[in-house]
Image: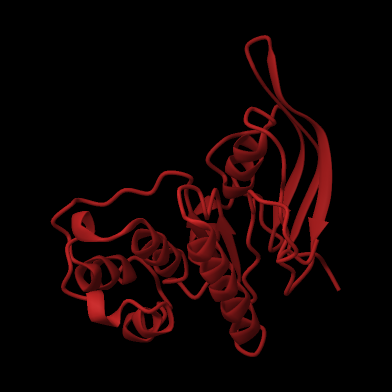
Length: 201
C-alpha cells in the first residue's frame, strides 16, 4: 500500500539558519502521526512544505501522489489544513463560516453534519469572537474537514486549551479518523504538542 504522505531528505534554511535538516518519514492511511519537538525545531516549516506553502531547498515530498507545489490546486481539494494560527472575522457566525467556505470545494462535506459531530450546532449563530478557545478549535477542525479531505493536517491543535479540552479535542480527532476510515477519506493529524498516547506513531 502506498503511503498517504512521503517525505524524503527534506532540508530547508532561512539565511544561515537551518530550520529542517534531512528529515524523512512516511504516513500510512488511517494513521494519526505526530511531529514532536521544542519551539524552533522546524515542525511548522515541515508542515508548511507538506501543504505546499513553502518550497524545500532539497528533498522530495509526495502527498496522495501529488507534488505539493506543482499540484497545489488539486491538493487543496484533497488536503484539509488547520493552520497554527487560524483567525476569522469576529462577527462571522459559525454556520456562516462553514456555509461560505464549503463553496470552495467540489465535493464538500455536509457542513450541518460537521457542526453536529463537533458539538457546534448550539453555537451555529454565535459570532467567532464570542466563542471560547475550545469552540474556536472545534470550528477550525470543522473548516479543515469541509472539503471531505483524504488527509487532514492539524498544526498546534491544542495550544491554549486546558487539560480537559485537550483530551476532548483528541477524542474528537480519533472519532473523526475512525469515521473517515469507513468512508471516502482517512484523516491524518499532525503535530500533537504533548506526548500522550493518542498518536498512532
